[in-house]
Image (spheres, helix red, strand yellow):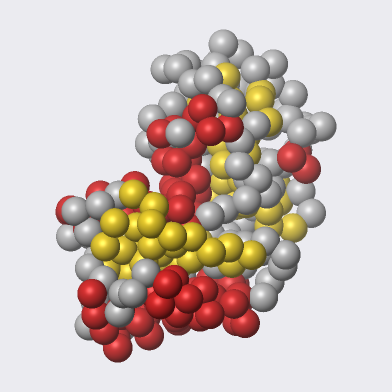
Length: 236
């Protein structure tokens, strides 16, 4: 049961949300490009002012930790840290992909999706060319493998049971539609990230006191990797 300010800046979307007791109170977003340095702080100020809340009244700050845009993540994390230092509030860092999978698993009807225990979720964040940041999740939004950077080529997911429905979404998914040939691949769901996707996980993190060190926390850039063709041997 907490009042949380949430910042999302890992992609082209600039998004700030205010949540109370796990429910969305206010949301401001811009999806027109990488203008986080101009808008993120303005969105924070406007949301707090419009809801007559000072930063000191917040219980915690949540920020998307990536993977995603280097510049966007630096801006979001720097602002979140500044608020935490000024207001003496704890900081939560939430995986961008975890937040997307968690939200879709809990709100499938919003995207006209039907999920069952045979469903898998694969949110994808565009990296470059045919490269994406991704992870495979169960129908409940729980990760089944580590988050990684992958080059999408012919045969991707071909070793996963053909009875499984695999739901692809995110700004990196739709460029892969012609390459992914799994018979039960479904390209449906949110194509953009949003701060509101973090609300449920942020509430869980507060209840678990799952905070990060404000001084030493760094975004999850996923820069040091060797991109390979995925084998995806998690689900058979």
